[in-house]
Length: 178
Picture 1 (cartoon, rainbow, N blue to C red):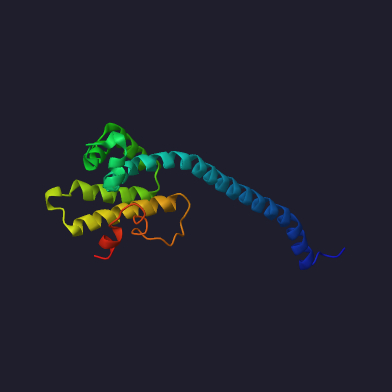
Picture 2: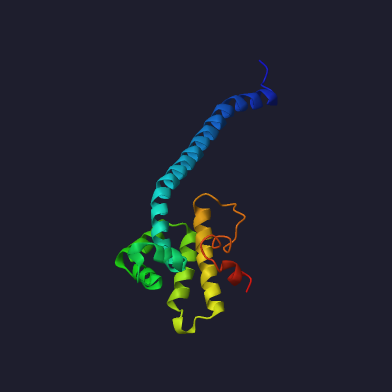
């Protein structure tokens, strides 16, 4: 009886290792696919909540920066100061609850942009509101809008924070170029 050659040993090892290797690759592929599907499903579920949270978070800023003519055109706003109404909304308990939800459900970049904006507002002395401070405030609002846009699926947007403002702030180009 002849002793098996090294080729026969390699063939035997290969015939045993091949199904094991295929099984391991199959399990890893299934695990990666399951994790990917879990992330996609979670993002889909969070998207609806995020839209509502983002709308509520942005509402006071939309009110404060809307054109005076548009504000006064609504009969319920006659003789109301839009800045006061916007600040009342921003200081309300419901707004704070929504901000808490933002901290839990918003993307990291959106939460950081919101934090930067709120810190700027907390330290803003309205008696010393200079063009530079207004420009910085507008830039922070634009950054928040841009991060929200990215978190909603437009990660590769070519817009900047100022382009995000031009559609609703009349003086945005003036402050951008200042």
